[in-house]
Length: 216
Image (tube, rainbow, N blue to C red):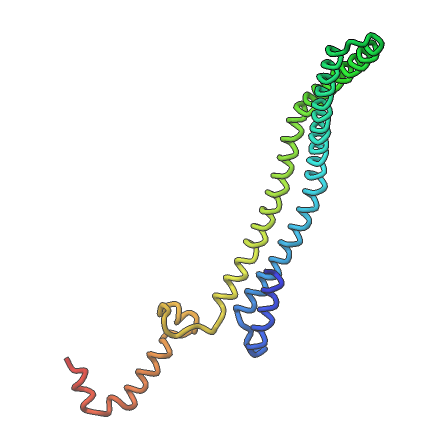
């Protein structure tokens, strides 16, 4: 939008003589320059959000991924424990009994360690609730500042736009309020009325028929 406004303003400027600049060109250029500043602020805001917000969220996401992987390991270990338990129950070889029991005990210990680790990770993640809420607050604050700056820039150009429009001498003769037309043209009598009255005075009043046409 910013680039297109400036391009269109340049093309439109070539249509008008240099001595008579177009108010539309001036407004488009002013708005385009302002949009350029707003876009620059937007880039800076996005960089700030990426640095202060997304990086912080990235750490939380990494913690959640680690928790998900731990849950997967826990699920696989539960299956391994169940398989080993069935092997132990179905074993009738005394020579392998101790070996299977040792494997079962090791899997049980591994299972308990995974459970402890997962519970710790869950409570650690829950304890970061305030931290996560604060990250959202920083995100909202950054966006508020950007939109506040955008509003300020747009409001700042409005008086200049109003001045350019109000002072532009080229105005339509027809289809506008008479008071506005007189103010824009800096006249006390509309040009159209003046020309018509002049013609009537110089030509119409000289014809007797004309008097009868307007006589009540």
